[in-house]
Length: 114
Length: 114
Image (cartoon, rainbow over all chains, first blue to last red; front, side, top):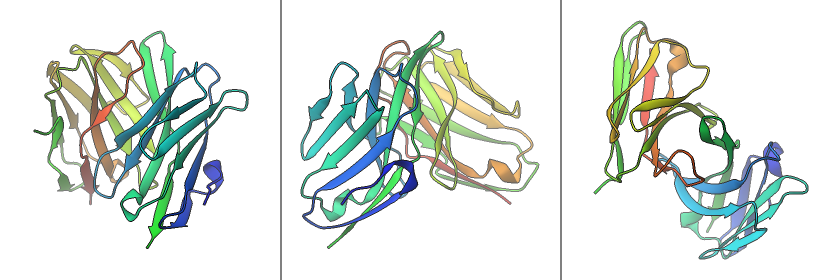
């Protein structure tokens, strides 16, 4: 299953399928990107990050892809499990005169059906 | 041990009251933040402090006053609470302010103003 940016904030997939969550970021000067997972009643938890000098980074069952040309970030989750059900946020970091600032995207609700 | 802890978890109060939310981190980080999450799950930065010094102050009403007695604590005091203040408030910390590093979030304080 796949979400398309900010226009489809929900994604429903079957257990075992791969999930792709997309994010369009706003600032071409952003140099660091993070994906967070937020389960109900909890704070955002770090999943994976990527710096702007890379276009792909892999973790355990997760892969982040960065396309700076079109300012697009995606999170791929392999073999999605019910425990992956949560809201997923992309965040971009911008260095300014007062230091770095992490700005969050809208979020995508991922629901995994058993 | 909880890395970033905030209290209370839930706060229900009447309009016009003054309330405080406390946050403590035991990670030895230099920088702490307050984020507000609205009913649509949108996360927006409110303040950041680096070593007790205010770094970021977004367009937040001056009824909100953060206080950092030391770099491990960042409390948020809210005067004359309004209905629109109802949200989930997250405290977060990061090792340093001037580099690209992930944030560690607390579990949130759900504020309901009646």
